[in-house]
Structures are given as C-alpha cells and as structure tokens.
Length: 190
Image (cartoon, rainbow, N blue to C red; front, side, top):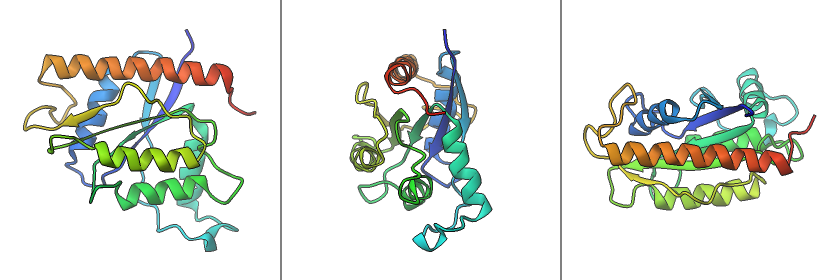
C-alpha cells in the first residue's frame, strides 16, 4: 500500500482550541499509510497582492509546505457562521499569486467541532466554496459535524466516547481512500 503525506491546518489560533484537540485525535486515529503533520498558520502576515512579486520567508515556507504534501485536512471552528480569518488568510497565501496555486489538484478533507449542536456545518460549507475555487478536490462524504462536549477529547487526543472514536476512525479511513482515488487519476505534478 502507498503512503501519503498529509498536512493538516487548524483554523483556530487558540492554544486551548477544541479543534486542536480534534486534530490530535484524528492524527492518532489515522490509518498507518497517512503520515500526518501540522502546517501552522499563526505566523503569516495578512495577505496582500503587494507581496506577489516577493513573498516574505514565512509565507514561502508555508506555501512550500502545502506544495510538499499529498493532501490537506482542514480542521476548523466556526466563527460568525464562517471560517476564521486566519484560515482564509492562509488559503489566500497558498493559492496566490494567480497561476501558482498550491491547492490545485490536491485532495482535501474538511472537519471541525463546536459546542453548538450543528458543529461547524456552516463554516464547512463556506470553506468548501473557497476550496472549490482553489481547484482542490473535496471529500464530500463522510461529512463530520462534531458537537464538542466537555471531556469529549482530552489534551492528548484521546476520545472518551467509543462511538465518536469509531466515527472519527472511519472518517480518517474514508479520507485515506479518497486521497488514494484522487491521486490515482490526478497524479502529483513533477
């Protein structure tokens, strides 16, 4: 079986983010063929096309980190019925300048958690629209809208509820199969 490098982006910049806990759980539950690593977004300045001719070093490293992985997993909270500004800013850096989009043909998955009963459903729909424009093939099923409750996931990524753990494991298995299918028909460019 092939192995794949998967970069994951956590939409929240908060150190105690429940989405960071979710990301840690997903890393633990990922099948062995997925080699997961976080691609941090917190140090990026605000994007402006004024930088297109000469990206700052932090943005060049970020853009290269996206280019170097086989797939991207977005773990996002929901802020004001959309994605956090920091996450949108990161996507803008990686997808610009025009014609140098690091997300093109790169399989992506979207998941998130919130204390609300619909999880991050609205933010995920917003993110899907952005990723479609970026030409990033999206895993459409299994959708995952996780309602976070106290002690659902601890700081080490351990999931307290067996049914939630089983669901997240299945999500990661489906994501792995999706990455394999996409890359079989859209191989990475040289």
